[in-house]
Length: 109
Length: 117
Image (cartoon, rainbow over all chains, first blue to last red; front, top):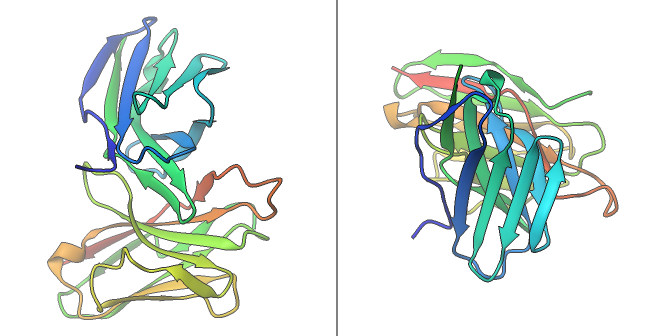
């Protein structure tokens, strides 16, 4: 079992709708979680991080963490074509981040 | 510098050759990481430096891979006797300095794309 699991997709969402990206992790002791966005041929860039159970909102993005279920999600409201990218979920640790394989999101105009 | 800088951005080499990839982290960042990313995969951890020393090199796939950071700033990833399976994007990242500033976020460079023919 991989430490961080994501559905690779592609996930296709119409423009203006809510995109929901999901991630599960195996290490119950994990404390911090990160969502990175990666455009094709580019490096990952941070969208949000979350440490506490519940929701964290930043503009059109909401991260959700449920430690009991070992589940992290990212919601993107009012999806735009520019949101089309691969979204990487990662868990933090003393030696850096462990990434999932990423979910390829396509926003259809 | 303003961001993490990696050179070369692209490297094409022949099987069996030696390759060096360079990373210049954000000024003041003491932690430096090397990851490898293959097509359709997430970044895979290789090695982590805290200052000049390798704090964790458990991700290096074999003894053909080696990395150094002699002065605690610039790092070089060295690959000996390259194989076609080494072809990937090699990403370097650095992490914020003091405890207050450190959210755990890694700041990535643009990567070095290595192609082994």
